[in-house]
Length: 458
Image 1 (cartoon, rainbow, N blue to C red):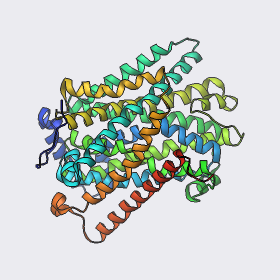
Image 2: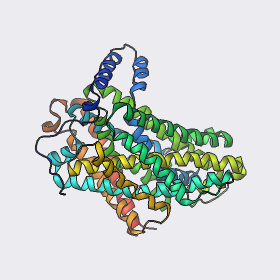
Image 3: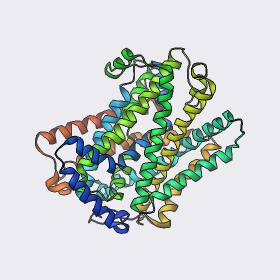
Image 4: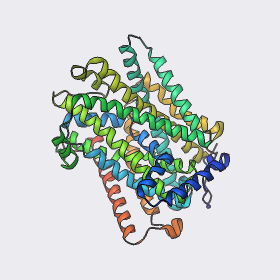
């Protein structure tokens, strides 16, 4: 089987909801027009809340094992001082996602085709292959950490849960969720998005329980968010740049436009798109990561405890809130992160392979393609070869600025957006913000690559 070469004519939309449930989609569009006509912003926001969805997918995938680990290390090493990093990082990422969403909704063109025809075929291929590799590799730690916390929770209940049983349980849940998205039916896609939303709620509530037990230093909290402390040591700089540059990963730049098309969204959904990103992506990410930083700052930082893994946190909280509560609460939150991230990596793998090989995003071929991500189940039994995550990270670090630059260029392409190119003061602001996001991720990529190569000064 050979890779499909997109034609010069961009394909429009996805045959998921539009062909299988057009009546429901038209009903949603009519409802949205009524909501957009409401005089009060609060009334419109209440209506938008009922229709939100793709934004939850973005917050679910970015709130994974990596995010948990980075927030834990930031809080345990620097206390409240780095609370500003995650909000600024996700804000820059949401700006880029807003531009991606704008381009997708006004053109309804498939983004892989757009990269191929409007930028360059090699850019599209490099983007797709990089996303696919990352979607497989990043599932390994989800299975590894998810299996560990499941077994830890079973141990609290006095049960000995075999590793293979825990891994198989995660595999079944992730596969069922991922395949429900590929069914192409609107009710299944909405149910999938709601499930992710509830799992995000679970992780937030789990971390909130720890913070309530340990308390909050409000003065340090405010200073942490607005003091913009910058460490001078290598570890601190790596944490800051990594948080700023990777809050929105390259996989999300592929997932987001296709999740919008999968819902059948168009120009009528532009206002809903911005609301969805704000309340379903930005806020959950900021709340969840801030709670993790505060919880670890309150317990680990003040006691000078160095953390080697996210799972260690549950045990180090034992003297503070008790062994049972510490292990169950933190394990439940981290398990939710692992499930949502692994599920969405599966969806992304299906998206990428279907676009690259030219079959539609439904049916048995899509499901088989999505299963490639579940190779990550091996992570429950074997450690990744050292070179594989390093190689994948290097490709991601290189591709993320390239993807950002690509969307920046597309934002100004008349031959792509036509009359929808944003001009005037609003256009200048958009371009400035997008270039700022490009600069930050490029700096993060540069420092991380120097660190990996051992060229960063000690």
